Image (cartoon, rainbow, N blue to C red):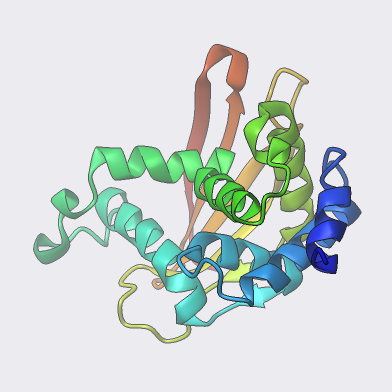
Length: 216
């Protein structure tokens, strides 16, 4: 007999995931599937699911793989963290490009959610269709807004203390979501690196702005 959880997800995925309620329902069921440890390599998907279901995440086992990428970017770009032993060569332009793709499109989230859905032979339109995915991203940012990521007292992060995601100013319809996506990266010296991103998919362009806010 087909698994009830998989059947519920199949029914839910028959329509676009456009509202925060739709998204929370989907994420909570996906999280249950992840608890079965099949497959076990979906670390990005697990983090994003946990972030939607909890206000703050601070366990290194959940967040560190993502925060280390942000830490590498900060060490490469932000004054005060560029040291000879951890210089610019440790975070390549390609890694920076991929990080900004993640900031705006949530590529790793998308690919790993697709992988899990395919594993259970569930519909993948939410990941395959750009418009459906952009609606999903818009709802997701609303759900996790103002929640934080950290890694406790991990010494593997040299620059980053916490990361918070929120909505920025409203944008016109041509953009992939109707607002700028704001990443506030609080640094260990008290400053905040604010990165705001948006994209116009038809023009295949990603826009970003970086502002360094002084320590409070």
